[in-house]
Length: 191
Image (tube, rainbow, N blue to C red; front, side, top):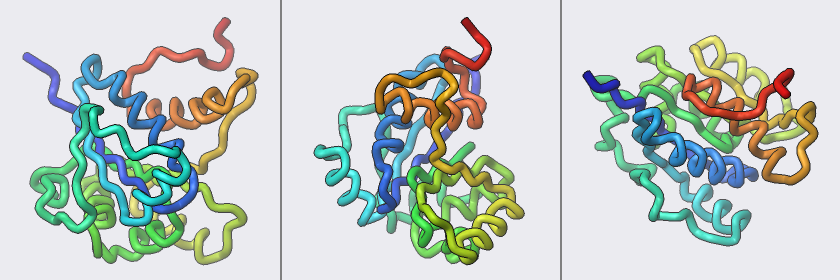
């Protein structure tokens, strides 16, 4: 009997930090066959522009992912009857956080967040804003109370990163661990 596919949706908003999204998708694609992953992608309109600006290239459409427009409410994961196992919004703008916290479901990304929360699936929001105001903090509280996870883009340094990619990977590997996906990485305390 084959293992049921693990369906991950990745949302990319217009917040700065799209390098995190790029790296997460690349890493998930490397782990795809071993872990039986289905990877879907949603860009906000601004997310597409910021991705291009920050990465100096468009998204690699040759990767094994499906891309859905943010206004496509016919995407399979827009309904609880065909839900995703996890949604990672990376980076998550404070505007998207607020819309999710208040259940607006005005676009596919927010609707998917609503669905994964109501179906008790994983919602990870990688925020990259600093400093935070009280509205941001209250919205994070609402998302946490609803079952989501706020995931600040806070890299670790105890493995002595030598490159920007090492720093980015420290965040990406934590996200993948939180999704319960098997990966072989160097860990704290291991030689």
